[in-house]
Amino acid sequence: MKLEEKVGELLKEKKLFLSTAESCTGGGIAVLITSIPGSSEYFNGGIVAYSNEIKMSLLHVSAETLEKYGAVSRETVTEMVKGAMKTLKTDCAVATSGIAGPGGGTPEKPVGTVWIAAAYKNEIVTMKQEGDEGRKGNVKKAIQNALMLLYERLK
Image 1: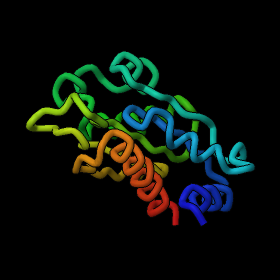
Image 2: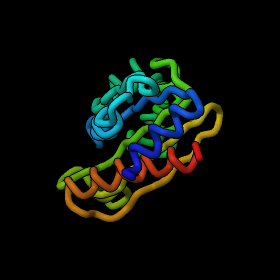
Image 3: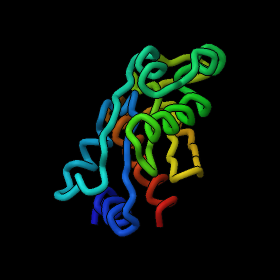
């Protein structure tokens, strides 16, 4: 059974609703979640917040957080995941923000750096994904890591 199916079963079983806040994964998590028949029973929606303006206006990420820590940070994905639950009225959410590549990296945040957050009610966990596996590989790995982080919270 695929991870997105396992997540869906747990959400259904616990009568929970999921939302997503995605930057570098471009909606890929939402695509996997909604590929499961019956996902409308537990998936409210997702926001692809590629720009900082959308992170601020729709996901309630503060300008101060973006200024101080940058879009690719634990602090930003924590605010994104909280914002997704608030805006889309859900019990749990996942958020991603990173540098998929091939450009955009810095010595402090090289290509392949992705911050991921998963929230279940008031519990939020984060992880930093590192290592450049090419744009597609970085995105695919981030999607799987986000689903795994959520799955670990739900089971």
